Figure 1 (cartoon, rainbow, N blue to C red):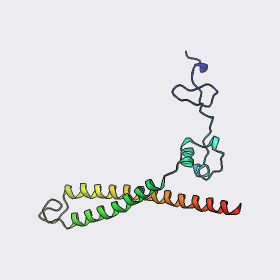
Figure 2 (figure 1 turned 90 degrees about the vertical axis):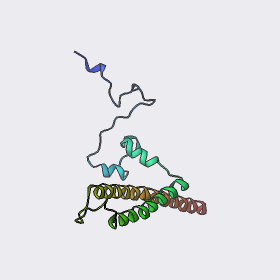
Figure 3 (figure 1 turned 180 degrees about the vertical axis):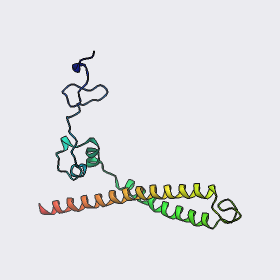
Figure 4 (figure 1 turned 30 degrees about the vertical axis):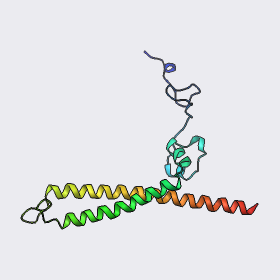
Length: 144
């Protein structure tokens, strides 16, 4: 029988094997949205929230992500229009019903469109955060 003392305890003072730092004790909140809004001090927030709090995108990366999102809209909407008008017989059979080729490529286009939209939103949020940061930095500099 193995005793409880032999098992590693998360949040204990001993170092956990494979990590360079101790893991703080944390009882997850019932409402994670409250943690995301900052109701809990940083030392007791979930690790994912800490990463979101400290993540900062550079201006070039933010612009790249936004451009990728816009590019995805242009490319995949055009692709679906062309798929819909396909006259080669691949997308529609002789009776005009969609084929497996049509459904697979439509699913591919929708998935890529949604991923591109999400990536573009991340880039837009990065640019807006940089603009807010620059505005608050200028306001603080003028107050002195």
